[in-house]
Each structure stands twice: as C-alpha cells, then as structure tokens.
Length: 208
Image (cartoon, one colour):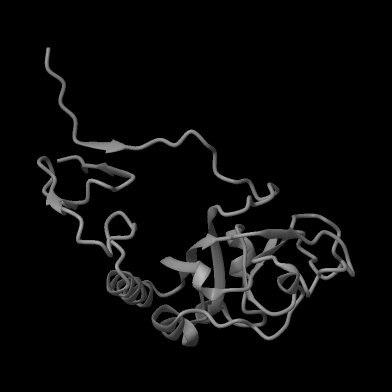
C-alpha cells in the first residue's frame, strides 16, 4: 500500500498566548501596530522610532489584540490607516496593572525591555480594556506582514516592500527565518509547482 501527500504542517506543543496571559521573558510573540498610511513605507524601510511619551512612557506601542491596533492612530479615517503584523522579542517584561504604578514610565530604567498592560486590569485611561505592550528597543520588532489596509492595491504594494526589506535583511521570504548564513534551498513543489522552502511551517497544494 502506498501513501501520497502534497504538503505538510509542523505542529508545536504549545498553544498561542492568549490576550490575558502574561508574556514570558525572552519569547517571541505575534503582535500588531496601527499607524498612518503616510508613514508606512518609512517604517518598513527604516524601522520603528520610539514615541517620546505615552501611557507607559517612551517606546513603541504594540498589542497582541489586532482590534486594539486597528483603533490607531486615533481620529483618523480607516482608509488612511494600516496595521502591521509583527514578531516581537519581548525580553524582560514588566506588568503594569494599576493607575500610578511606581514603574509605569520608568520600567526600562529599572532593567525591563517591555511593559505589558493586561486586559481589563482597571487602568482608567484604557477604556476598551484591551491589552497593550510597549517595547523600548525598536530592533526587537520585525514587520512580517501588512495585516490591514483598506485599499487592496496599496496593501499589495506594501507587502511587496515588506518582502523585499526582509530579504535584504537576510530573512527567507518563504519561511520567514534567518538565512544570513546562506540562502535556503528553495525548490518547486513536486505536485503544484509552487516555490517552497523546506523550513516553512506548512505548505498545502491547492486542488488541481
């Protein structure tokens, strides 16, 4: 008896982090950042810049909740917004879960890389109750995709730019992993002909 298949999927033995779960030191998480469309290309090519101030002080504000990211920037029409999908290396995390927390704006000066506000923790300025994160070092943040953009043509152009930037930075555009030590062996799938990388998390052939 022979078995044939066209694709694979690698399964991990851990579940994705829920909004309410505290991020663990040193882990990498998927997060989102909303910004004005006019700033999108500069952020993709030059990286994020720390905001000067905010609820958690200086840093880059992100969230694991995409609906939170969709709200930003505030008071801007939806057609002028874009949401980036990110990979964030959180480093050492400080939980800020109350108004006037003693380290609310000084967490970085006390040895932390990221501040985290849990959902529904009662901080008065977060009316939505959605979780929020602030990352001190922008180099801990990698843009992996454009999650939301009203204009599909613009989104496609931005996604191409993200792909080109990641390739220039030594990241495989198929598996999204570091390939600075050498290009990954990209090959054509024996079934559908699509270019694939053996380090991809998954690949499924479309029905012929």
